[in-house]
Image (cartoon, one colour):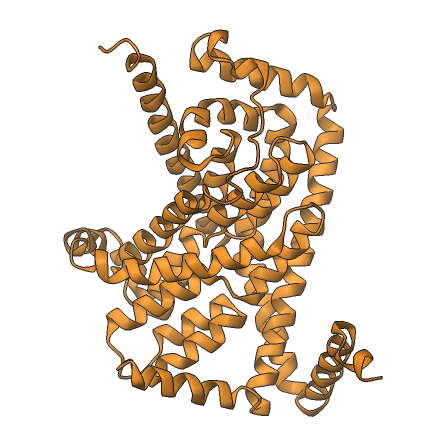
Length: 409
């Protein structure tokens, strides 16, 4: 009998009963929390994610993802031990935010374009916040400080790149995915190989445009409903736990640890809230009273990179369709959070001139952040093009250097 009680299923059932009881005792606050979750999903997540889910499906069908994969192969394989097609996933993940990187990785795995270890490396480094959320919601909305976006972006995305370099040692004995014949160095110049790879992928897919569009819309909408449901669920759970006082011992313990480390205890709220949901954690960090801005920025970077259990649940639901494991992703999220928090004080002083310039160009944001579909989509698209351009330039440069090195010229 005791073994049955301590079984994971028993714990899950007990937790479900406990949460049901909390909803019974706090019905109206739970409803308000659910409405806030729906608002976040509709105003922020839907315009930021759905177009990119749809576009990525179409680009896979037309072979454009394989085109960029061929271009990025000279960069991604040596640095991150990931096929070049992972460069496109990296650009989409950085531009559109979580869980786009995991979504695309699962699709690449299903097409056998990445193996398990490569997929786990790719999901680890491409799970990040989108720039619009980082700039508009966190820096401007929660901190009322547009300059902070420069530091948070450098720490968050710089930490993701460093994590990718560390994750290249994950599964070091696993074989790499073989290049297709169109990626062979002897096939000709890099651009010619890219077009050959795109043509090969399009012929292999073979679906007409109408069917491709129908399936892309259907699968993208299904995933958006999953994302929205998880956001609402964790918003309600966090509010119910807060009102019940169940998190009071956790708050007290963290405040004690923070005081021992000479860190303001008010920042404990950001850690606890951010453990469950990234928006709540970033908001708590920005509103922490009597706390130095540097400490608050470090906590915000930590929360953004950790992602919260809401994001973890979204990623786990996508990985469940593959043989990719959740534990490497969990470890990677913690490493990314630590790296981002450590990078904040490192880049704080060197980026002061850039922050001053950014403050002048982003002056219109200081009035506050108001979710806007057009601005969200335009900003994400701009970020995607910027990341693609940077990756393309680096890849072409590395390809050029690799051709010149053997000859000694």
